[in-house]
Amino acid sequence: MSNKDHFSLSGRTQLSIEFAPAVSVPEYLAGEVQSKLAYVDERIISAHVGSERITLEVLAPLDRSKLSSSDQAELEEKVQRVILSMAKGAIKLKVNVLEDHLDRQTLYHQDPMPDLLARGEINQEDTGIYTLGPLLTRLIDFFEAHFTELAEVFEATPYRFPTLIPARYMERVNYFRAFPHSLSFVTHLREDLDVIDQFSQHAACDEHGLNTPPNSFSKIQALLSPAVCYHLYFALADKPLPSGRVVATAVGNCFRYEAINLTSLERMWNFTMREVIFVGAKDFVLENRELARQHMTRVFEKIGLAYRVESANDPFFIGEFRKQAAFQSAFQLKFEIRTSLPFKDDTLAVGSYNYHQDFFGRNLNITLPDGSPAHTGCVAFGLERIAYAFLAQYGLKPENWPAYVREKIS
Ligand code: AMP
Ligand code: ZN
Image (cartoon, rainbow, N blue to C red):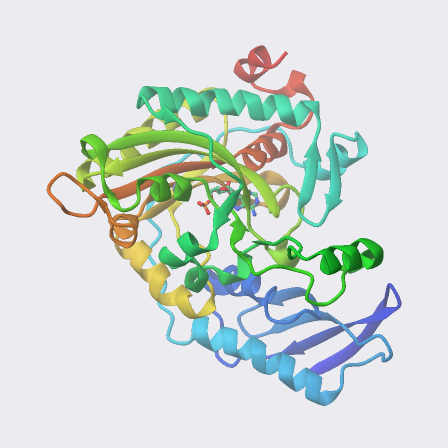
């Protein structure tokens, strides 16, 4: 392990630590492991996972320029735990490509973020929290028109869902076990005059956040919703499904705390998702998921988006990752729409086609007319991401956009 001094960041020294992983990390897992290192230790400010080398940038304690050897050993031990859990004996999951339009000719090769910030088109309020200006708003409305058109093809019922989601429901669908790292909790002051008085006098922000008197907050009953479709399943819970099938659509604020991975519009803490949701028998859900994909193929062709649809897995937390990802892959439960980001020669998921089998039907007791648990599936689009990916492919000047898009947004 090496521990090299770097430079000072807000009075604290930033160090680079390197060591070999306990088992080598195969290339196909490197990104997945790297994204999990964001949650290993609060001192980590960036991480890079190579097959034979882990590099961490960490902050030294306030009063020192180095980490003590026991602190370093503790940090390394936690990282190795993640690596062993995710990489030891890992088997490469087969990637099934359903369509590939990544070679579609796009014009732009720069990161749109600096320009968007410089123009005041986006304003970063805090980590992962952005205000969007007129260009992005109009682009998102343009994409939204296509998503609501998709919903109309299926005669989906429109819904509006709350931003808060009750903890007791999240527990019922195993969310705390599968994705604890990305949860965002909601609380309020305890209903107690002394607590509220104390808070009003002493609450004060510093650069790390809000300082409050101890025991100010009530027990957590609600979280910020990480997805849209859960609300529909909760509304259908513990009853037979009316007429054996439901197709619904809704757009909503979603929240996933992604720590140091919260960079640019690519990965936000607070983002917006449009979903079209299918509930019913297995074949009904699977057929509609496929019809939705075929419909969107035609839409993306008109828009000129360069993308690929391929099998994927959800970002399960460390201990759950291997088993759950293998399960999703084996049963082809998730496909992502991955758009190219030409400036970094990479792809970004702007949407997904999901089939949950009877997971929600079983856990939430949603039954079909024959008494068996309902199957569910959803098509989900990240609105900020799709607008961002479009700008990464075509730039900020409407005159360089495909004619179809230009004509619709004037
Ligand atoms: P998922 O349910 O994980 O398939 O998410 C559906 C879509 O939401 C993704 O394809 C993204 O477009 C979008 N999305 C998910 N997480 C984020 C995030 N942290 N920031 C912005 N968009 C996101
Ligand atoms: Zn969904």
